[in-house]
Length: 324
Image 1 (spheres, rainbow, N blue to C red):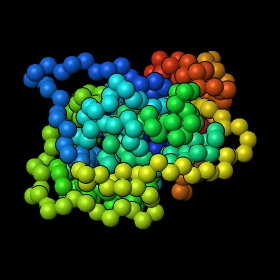
Image 2 (spheres, rainbow, N blue to C red):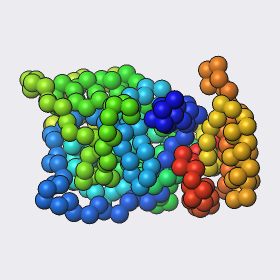
Image 3 (cartoon, helix red, strand yellow):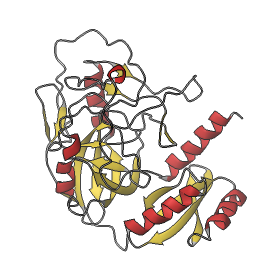
Image 4 (cartoon, rainbow, N blue to C red):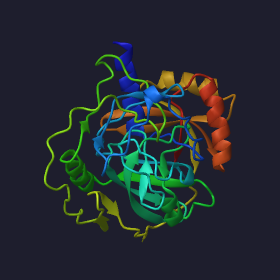
């Protein structure tokens, strides 16, 4: 089996078990691009993009259309330093709109983000890539963080769920109006190196855009309140739903890996146990049993970040912070 196929199988196992990665603070502003590598100008309304696999700070990300996406993790937010700059799909970033950055989901997509600590839940539009510091699952706009109640704290334990039909609807509208990029296979030739948002898109060269259509406006998804902006984007309304707060403590773990073979999981557990107590948590995915290697639990995000850094230094590059 080729190394690329092994990588894909490992990534698939992580995705099924619910791994995620993000950033606790807004990343530093990207350096100014050289004239020959000028940042792309914004595209009115943005374009539909999935993108090729890309690498940031030694970590590989694999964008894909995933309408089963439903994960927990730590959310962060980014704001003033990126306001009005281009997002990864060419839209203008507006810190006062309900948008967010995600590492792999299609752009645009609609996701429901629920703060597991207070039950607040909103819908946001994915239009950017990030965050790129291990340990975070999604980077919210400032307005999104305010509505979820963690703009002062900086992070929150959240669940992120893609809205399937709504995401398909806005994707179709974007594809009818601009360039389209679909995820490439890791086996399909050279993999491009990507730069962090928002200056440079993580995708390769865009495909030729389709012929213009008279209007890109579409009826807003019936199940989500919102408006269609002047440039044709569907933007969720600032509607906060109050969800039940899950009973008991929402524990934070560093999930170092997931294996179909117990002996492999046990070897990793033994190697990481010197850093912090490590356990093996079985989980069934379809007809296959996986053995998840988890370090923790931890009382707070700061401690989890410290341990995650130590785990990554051992060469366990797939380690992520999760909430369970």
